[in-house]
Image 1 (cartoon, protein in one colour):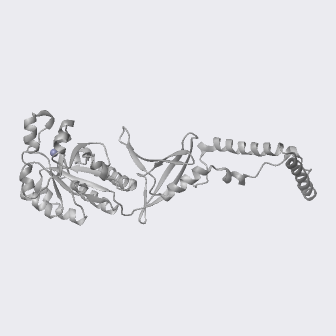
Image 2 (cartoon, protein in one colour; image 1 turned 120 degrees about the vertical axis):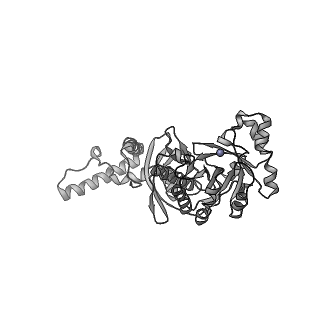
Image 3 (tube, helix red, strand yellow; image 1 turned 90 degrees about the horizontal axis):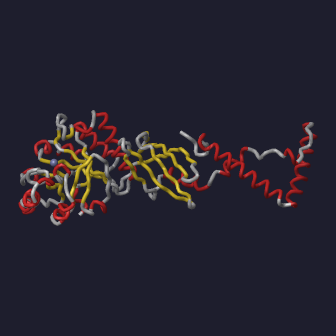
Length: 372
Ligand SMILES: [Zn+2]
């Protein structure tokens, strides 16, 4: 951990430059003012005389006036950087954090800040966060753009309740397996969305009674981009009346395989409040962007993780990032079957990890229809 006032090696050069510049300015001011110059000479001779008489040293002349002591260093550290560090350490809510996923799937959490017309970029080490009582301690690096000065420090982040949350969904038709997790969901205060493929079934009522939501996932799970318009209507709209008449509102629709074309959005948004695609990149939303009508959800199926440790590391990090960005940030996550053996599904132990971590981070569980 690095102290605020310590200066990393990379800064040494520019730091020396600042010291030199300051000294030059002081000397210049002195030399341009004859009155000050005279006063300074008298003072120097007087002090030199005292020193010489005490220690037997030769008198100090203007030529070898001692350099200012090291202690002047703190007062010449640039003010805006200090103030920005203070804001970052306070983790104030006005800092707009965001994340980027690079081509190697590494996720970076950043924020751009400005202070006194200077701009700064902060990089937060959310992955390396260390648990402390009630939260985490995490390192950050802040860089003053243009100047190229950067500092490292850490902050204490305490978990509080806000509107950030998770939009957890299960697709297709694994009604028996899904019924088997109702109690697990309850224990973690989780409400989820089941995107049902096929016809209305008693499962829909049971899920709603337990506080969950039913979304629609077409009649037969065909690739909608490969069928006729007529077939498209049959697959997506012909049966929704039977659900709605039975009190299942079907506010949300998920494309089979996540595949769609823009013209489909238009037709389906006349019939559903929100449409959902599918992908392997993490995306976060907020109520406003969800209400725009289309979101993409990451798949958290077994097949995408090498082992449990890989799942815990990745999902644990994404949940933590969602909470750290905070505010009303919402992350959609989607899986299918509940089984360790299923490629397109989630093992019960992974699901439990996810639910417990989300609850521990005080992330809210949202259903798709909650935003309408
Ligand atoms: Zn599906």
